[in-house]
Image (tube, helix red, strand yellow):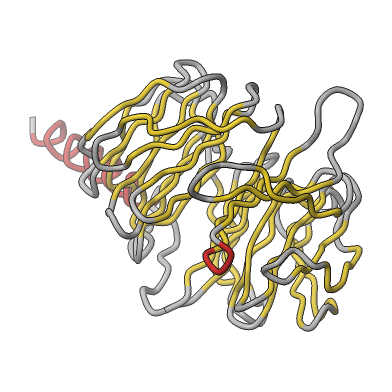
Length: 317
């Protein structure tokens, strides 16, 4: 009998130890980083501002996107997964899973309202959650809601498979307006100085999109086109310069807030993502498994990632 009790104790300890080992390497709360979410080899690579690797998290789940909840939580989702997972960076531990059903296309956190928004292509909905993962509201949209940004209490959502942008009141989760935009639009950025919304996209059919469309932020009225290159889909900014990745032509464009092109640079292979980190611009090359550190329009350094860097996350503390 004593042998069985001893065996059970050892077995339970082994199980608990296994669970402990499943935690990922912790990320210090005072550590700034740029992280590359890789979707061919599902993983997350963390780098400091010098391009030195901090940690790599390798996943068993096929995550396709992520967002940060300041300052210590990471939301991970996958289009074919039934739930979103929330990890605590400082412990590397999974702290919550929220069942959403398959079809999650994007996760976006509004820092003013402290709400997390999840879009779903199967149900064509956007759902809001508070910081504790409690559902706050749900709204049905058009077809394949995906790209999101917010400003002064309104959430702007591109419906990828419909020529429609939905404007949603965040607090009431009601539809305020719908704008006519190009089908297959993807990527957007709000530019407060000009009270405009910039919209990118892949282009429909065999015709790749080569422009960024600029709309009035209040009325949705089309204002101008910014001529860039093939398939502009990624946006970021650093002070007065807005950066746009064109994944069809492997180019990064830099513009002022009025849409004037300042310079362009070939960088990466199939770059979907761009981010601002410290005084640098980071571009992820999906096909060459590299992220590039750029200053003043010149590549300063490139570092290898796991396969398929698709999204960049930045934390500056």
